[in-house]
Length: 483
Image 1 (cartoon, helix red, strand yellow):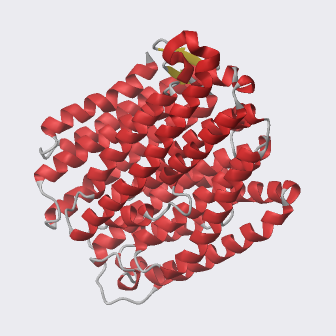
Image 2: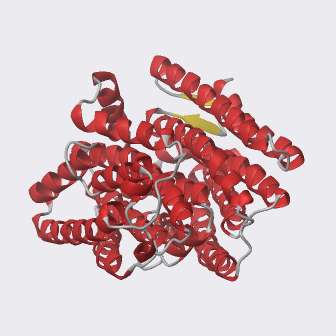
């Protein structure tokens, strides 16, 4: 019942907002629907804590401690982003960048995107997972192109083409997965694509076919993760879409695509009896981390800057999952959490900073502390958090990844350290003038409320200072399921 509410609420909300999304009260309705989804997700978490795992709807949906924490995180960020978008999108409308018809499209597609993400996380069917990822792609293409400028349409087209090719490769990988499983589960029809069935017989699957399927699945879903060299869509989509869309792309979509990659890696490692799938993840992760860190220096747009930062951090997560083992998986899950919360908070602050300055160019944003202290502190604290400064939780997760790499793969440690140092210098040197630089602008009489920013950063700070034992046990259990 809880899962039905989690999936049904945003889907129902998309239909309602497709009709009522042009009204002035649509923003409040979007917040209420997102809150209802969050409450349903919290109830689902409580049920999983009590029962361990469950399958519902004729085994087409499956929830365990691994994906339920991502469902909860998705619902939380979906709610806080809806709260943030309420004043933000109204300012955009007042500035003439949006009209009521585009707001209707935004609100309905936002809830459709949330529904697609939640289906992808909770489905037990690898085919339905592909369908949900494709639905997420189509809905976010419309969101990225919302402003209908030349740049936004170009970014949406690039996003559609690159992710469309990626998702087509993932479809071929899914077909190969079915081909390998059908020999063992042929008498059970489409149940050959159920992840629980595949996981139970993964040791008997044809390693050659599964290995080939994993290559296509990794490249396909890895495109959605933003792994290099298939990352080119991500900075453009972040820069040209509305800021709430940037927040959910970095905070939600990348995590869900990473979840799909990890599920596929579990099957491939079990079928091939080899560390090759893990090594492939490590290679893509390390390449993405190093490349993104150096590309940060070339950015002149604040949202593109943090878009490349997302590529860097997803590379760290991919590398950690590639190493495998309890500590590395624990670190990867923690980093998924703190990165999502921190990066969405940064985009909230950066969005208001861009509105205040009237530009997204870094050299056009100056003296935020003097103009709007809440925005200035939100951007500065968020930047320090994402750079891994203690005592924020990003420091904890990155430290765990580094010590695991030093112990098991010392050759990779210098690359990680150099990438982290380069990224730290690039972001800090670009953010510092935006926050503390001199400006002639007057202080805003009514500064924007940034409650979601400080809520997110407070959670990240708490995870760095003290992790509740129950939450730590939850992470350990989820890490053990990954292998």
